[in-house]
Length: 121
Image (tube, rainbow, N blue to C red; front, top):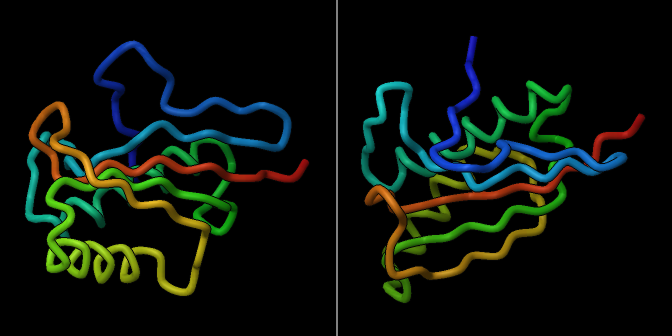
């Protein structure tokens, strides 16, 4: 069983308004707070999003958009590594995506991903 991550600041992991669920940015830290390489962090961030979605009765299939904040751009090798891991984590799912290069993230993470989902009913 996957547990939801713990917020590291003054924010909600997700907020639901009607059929919309807005998931706060998730990093790839594991339950012990450990970070791996970019591929591991990307997979971990998607897994953390899936856990938050599950807590609200949703799945990755309900995600319509993701915004990814990535350290290391514009290096094309960094983007390629990220895109491979992202694709592996999402499988056949293809939500709309924006990828933004950032100078850094709060705890030295390489990736943070936020998601928007639509949950009917």
